[in-house]
Amino acid sequence: MAVFKQQTPKKAPNPETKIVSWLRENLFPNATNSALTLLALYVIYLIVPVVANWMLFDATFAPVSNEQCGIKGACWSYIFEKLDLFIYGFYPPEIYWRPQWVLILALSFVWIAKLLKQHKYKTKITITLIIIYPIISFFLLYGGPGLEIVETYKWGGLMLTIIVATVGVIASFPIGVLLALGRQSKMPIIRFLSIIYIEFIRGVPLITILFMASVILPLFFKEGMDMDKLLRALIGITMFQSAYIAEVIRGGLQAIPRGQYEAADAMGLNFIQKIVLIILPQALKISIPNIVGSFIALFKDTTLLLIIGLFDILSMVHLTTSDEKWLGRSTEGYVFVMVVMWIILYSISHYSKVLELRYSTEHKN
Amino acid sequence: MNTNIIEINSLNKWYGEFHALKNINLKVKEGEIIVICGPSGSGKSTLIRCINFLEKFQEGSIIVDGITLNDDVNNIRHIRTEVSMVFQHFNLFPHLSIIDNLTLAPIWVHGKSKQESKNKVLRLLDRVGIKDQAKKYPNQLSSGQQQRVAIARALCTSPKVILFDEPTSALDPEMISEVLDVMIGLAKEGVTMLCVTHEMGFAKKVANRVIFMDKGQIIEENKPKDFFNNPESRRLQLFLDQILSR
Ligand SMILES: Nc1ncnc2c1ncn2[C@@H]1O[C@H](COP(=O)(O)OP(=O)(O)OP(=O)(O)O)[C@@H](O)[C@H]1O
Ligand SMILES: [Mg+2]
Image (cartoon, rainbow over all chains, first blue to last red; front, side):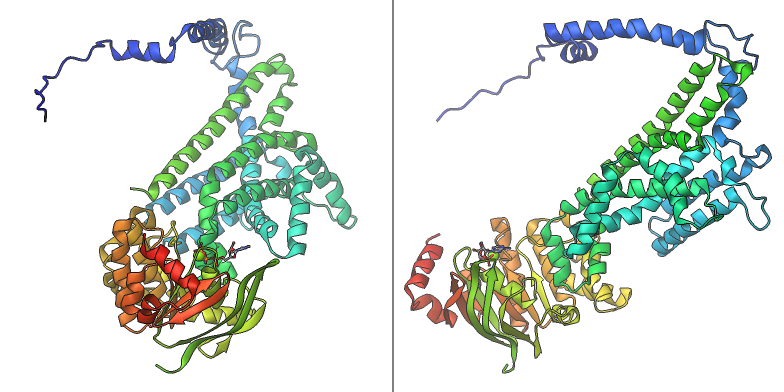
């Protein structure tokens, strides 16, 4: 038997500060990585000052004319003057409050739903809000009894981009769920049709579907019965998006273990109960990141609306570049679109990561 | 104790070309506790899964509580309201709290009110000893607790028969007895149980009959005392030697 003497604690041998050791571990761990770090720093040194000077330090923010803006920096005056057009398209300026309220309602409904977390009627209220929101929004945007009608060809800009992307995702969601279930169905005809639809749509670019929707859809209607251009685009986008959502959800469905189906079956739930109460909630939870990813892709794709003559934010910028007053300022316009798009899409993708994290920890300790 | 709650007559099942159940005949009286054992792949799971129609079969008939199983949707649903099942891997629903896991069937299948089901479920959870976990989610419980929840879930519709498919074989060893205790309690209350398990202590203690299956057939069936002490067939002797020497 051996007895060991108690050791006294010694000071750690590496008294480097945190920053130094972080730098060493992450930026300069060895020769190759150090070289790469230096190269990257050099590239940043080349690019950042040029961009920053153009965007900020040499730029003009004051409301002045094109000529008064120098040629050295960006002329944001152009953006400020056209901002309303970029956001609302040709929507009548005196009723901008209508789209503004659509946004305010969306935010407050989300907030209400959040507050209700433990409320007895949570589900009922949430479902009611989800049903009435699109109706109110449509009434506000388009008009109707008591509100001046604004035809959809006047809708445009960022507003249109958001409307098309949101409607596209929301409308394609139930269809996507049905297609995903159809593709897994034991009934051969339903499965076959689902596969054909999904694979056909996924095999063609969105632009051809938009063309089809704007050129071919009217062929199905009688002479003189004109169908709203925006509606046609929405149908095309929904058709397109539902195929992608279907594949995303199918991935979620496949991740559900067979035991879940068996347990639901064994307790006597019918098919719809099994899908709605047991399978979909789990499958959707898993699919959130991919659903968001496909929403982001769609959001970017709405810029294609330009081609069928709808004026999303990019089209609006494109249109104003030919304004004689602001000739030569298209760079500012496109940079503006880039920044706006990036801010929106990055926020969405960041929020989806937060959601994902919350759900993945929710059920663990 | 004399009506047959389950009658299985010349049951045959194939998976493709593979003959998984060969001419099974079995009658179970109300309140009987039947233990089924046998080597892996002998068709034990397949047999009890035919009883609640999780598996289709091609020949023979199964009668549960006077109703002959066929593949009509309503018929299947009816059978499933009377027969519940406890699985090897619990199969609790991870997105629902314990209490929601348990009230699901009473509310959606039996049309009970939320409050009524909740009260009943809390009593059941108390009985399996996890009342204070009702608000938690399945992943927050130990495997033994999860299986006890699964047993409570099987009980909450007051079924006539409960099928168990190796309820203790996915548990950490120190948790087996807590689950077995719950099952023994149930057995004493007169619930009809068909139980696939290799827990021979359980079989000796509460089973009315023990059934040995091999290669898709019932090889031997006896009272537990004779089953363990005087196994007749060579295969059962070998099987018992293996099991008991573990
Ligand atoms: N879905 C299936 N398709 C094809 N063969 C199957 C299927 N399910 C089971 N089998 C086969 O049927 C036989 C019986 O399987 P079963 O699961 O009933 O055995 P078991 O006695 O429960 O075995 P274990 O103790 O391993 O659970 C096995 O040989 C198995 O390979
Ligand atoms: Mg088995």
